[in-house]
Length: 169
Length: 85
Image (tube, each protein chain N blue to C red):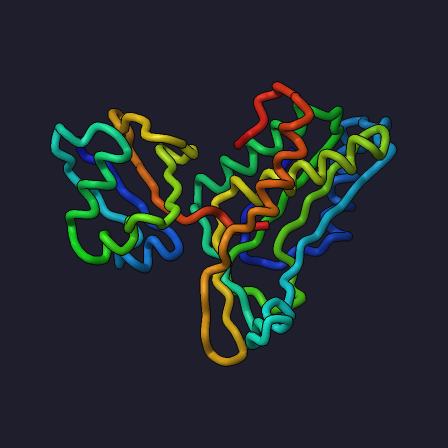
């Protein structure tokens, strides 16, 4: 159960191996499923509506609160599903198209809990972790990315289920 | 009451500062009181908190909604809806 916020790139295989080794060291031989999700910087946003392609993206965040929010979301996932291990890594700073932004790994005895918890973690962190993206376009303009209504709808999936588990948000 | 105010993303760009420590008069009791007080500080603040702009608030690094009291707060942050992930 770990969250990290950092500028450096992460390596998915390395993170997965580390999580597995830590689980093995604790004798958690019951893990039957690891799910990993990686979010990356899109380069084609805007090209469909005639705008210049994205050449870079800078993520600003709120040090201290970011870690606290991610830990809160992770704790909510752990309260809701029987997870044996989990990891959330979120990068900040300037990133280029194709770069990784966020990594979520969940581990459980069976795959359903790992899949669901990974999706829950992403849905909640997108609407509660204090990050803001500023994109730079090939024509030299830049703008703050606006929050999407679709993200709030994704969140509704988990609250409509009627769970009263202290989920964030 | 002395409190640290922090601004992020376009709220920070409009106010022209990332953070500041302010002494609030006693009549500033809630988040909306504070926003009103800040707006009077200059055109940058007025632009940041202009009507129609969605600005979120955190008190001591926790999201808050509505118009909660701010008594006892050490750090209050203003920022746009988040766009991470």
